[in-house]
Length: 157
Image (cartoon, rainbow, N blue to C red):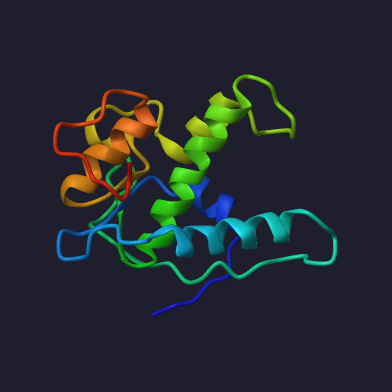
């Protein structure tokens, strides 16, 4: 095992895709956990006193050997709750900023294409994060701004 420190947004941008294996639990965070992550994010970004914030570990393995045409997805072993919540936060941020760019690099298009989707891919490879079970379709609907599935995930929605 190798531990590496990375900036979350750089890590998300450079990674081709995160897949949550079927044996991992579904998304289970409730408002208190989400509120804590939100508050930590706001606190870390609102002043110069806090230069960095440790969001937690994301443990993953490559799902297979990289192909010449694309990189292999990363199977997430730990950190799926944080990844899903950050993805939802980024989807909400993309919706809120529209096409304005209040901070360089943070327009709707850039947030979506850097952190939420792989714009040149189709099907499941299009999405940066693939959750398991009913969470998957619900998150894809939010990211794609499409209709919620009939059996949607209450926590994701």
